[in-house]
Image (tube, rainbow over all chains, first blue to last red; front, top):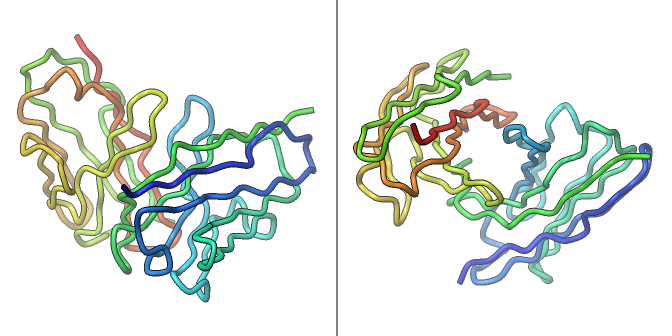
Amino acid sequence: EVQLVESGGGLVQPGGSLRLSCAASGFTFNNYEMNWVRQAPGKGLEWVSYISSSGSTIYYADSVKGRFTISRDNAKNSLYLQMNSLKAEDTAVYYCARDQYYGSGNFNCWGQGTLVTVSS
Amino acid sequence: EIVLTQSPATLSLSPGEGATLSCRASQSISSYLAWYQQKPGQAPRLLIYDASNRATGIPVRFSGSGSGTDFTLTISSLEPEDFAVYYCQQRSNWPRTFGQGTKVEIK
């Protein structure tokens, strides 16, 4: 069974840092491009970041560029999001999402999400 | 950045009725549009990709159409489990962007 499981969310003060992880199983992780997508409470979906299967190509939303860093460890079947200089507006459920196939840009597998709350 | 505008914001319908949801892009995105369904407390689920292709396991009552800037998701006859929020998403350009969502609620 294809599965993505996020962890690492929690309460952090403005200006603080947090590292999210996403553990993948049930598929050949190093064949797939991965993304982070977030959803603020009661709001819509916002794409955050993308990383290619090898990790050589990375994109970010302007709202997180310079503060967040996406990475992956294919040996550990894991995806990460290092979040620095956190702001209140970063409060959201963060989902890791797998591309449907190489270059698809559609997300056909999602984790259950991990909640990040930025508050003093 | 490509802006996707969904309409209406809310659709109030009864089970068995048909639903038509719209998504308009701020510039042409060819057929690079997907639709997702999200229920409360759950992750989104891919329904339609590349404007008109049903994802694996999606019932035939869901269909998508359109190209360029105007797209439609049609649910032919609403089942109780179809009441949810629906989002469109484009993969034509970076950054990937989503519409603001259409809530299909029980009338």
